[in-house]
Length: 190
Ligand code: G4P
Ligand code: NA
Ligand code: NA
Image 1: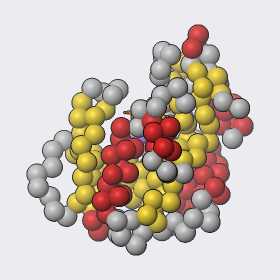
Image 2: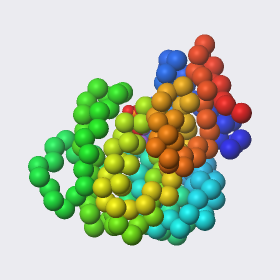
Image 3: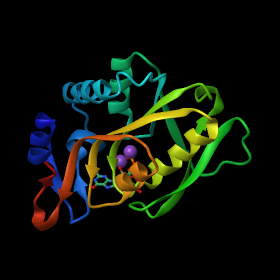
Image 4: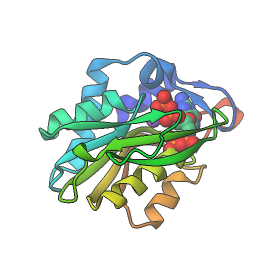
């Protein structure tokens, strides 16, 4: 998606060889017009997949996931993060480590909004190590639902999340793939 690459070059801030700050587009401010375009593009890639629900994890995945769900005409469910969950039988939950925040959180989805006959499209903003993503995929598996695929705005190819998920046989589509952030340069994979 060329327009998105351009915006990332203009507004992304390289923090280190590993981290690209995208607060202006994804993680703090949201550009509605650009987000709707992202939604259109990701929805187009999964239009024939029989998607019944879009799922993301709060918070930064929600705007683009909403845009995809609106395009496909299906509900959006966002997994919630909880500090602790004590024996709740009404929800599916998974414990996930957060590499960047250095803490462990539980993500949860109510059984009410994730059914065994669902075809789920998992949308997220950035895939890095993929810890949260693998947690949500486990939840989808445990529900008995079918994972139609995963769509992300940004894939950081130099981290292992996306590769690991594709190795599991999941179709993972990225709008933009970043090969390297070395020398303060954002390099896209062509
Ligand atoms: P993930 O790949 O499944 O997201 O898990 P990982 O543990 O690798 O990343 C943890 C968090 O850090 C995620 O946000 C992820 O989007 C964010 N992150 C990782 N690398 C980058 C980066 O280069 N730039 C930015 N802006 N974010 C990065 P999160 O914990 O899900 O929080 P939220 O943004 O949804 O609130
Ligand atoms: Na994030
Ligand atoms: Na996210």
